[in-house]
Length: 257
Image (cartoon, rainbow, N blue to C red):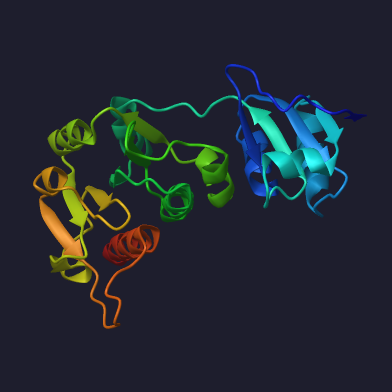
């Protein structure tokens, strides 16, 4: 390894990611990596990253901790990497994934979700629940960046994401391919466990504090809601989507017993 003070600038076709899990999973997933940066304050699992990088001939550079502190005020764990940007999957390729796996389709559509922490958490849930892919809009929505990768704990490397100019077009395409379009809305609908969700499903969740846009809600075949008894009567979008996704998985596992 060499010790140097990098410029802090990545190339025109590069992104920076940070944290042990995001960097380790980016390496393991085969993402193109230009350089791994390690500071003197090292996480206990950094040895795994060194081994993975060496195995794939990825250069590793030692940098001053201040360099990473300036780039990422918290949470970098002494590890960062310069990587190729995350590629979007076309909607056609996305919809082919469950067919190739011979599985019942399950997709997640995000209607103008703007918080990177929510998006990262949703990607982590998508990976855990076996969701075949996530659809987001290219504007008025969060982009896949370093914070999303960090919060996802590396799940961003394994969950296919389609970025579209208009999610309504993607929703219509999903319906034509046999998906039941199910929107999650705190404002009312069928209690989620009272609806058969074992069929091919595209689950749609709305923006923080706003919920589904009316134009998107009108495209749904069903609206589900989570019953609540507390005073707040609302949930963070990532938490709400997690509950819905777990219920869909539960119904499918129960049906296959």
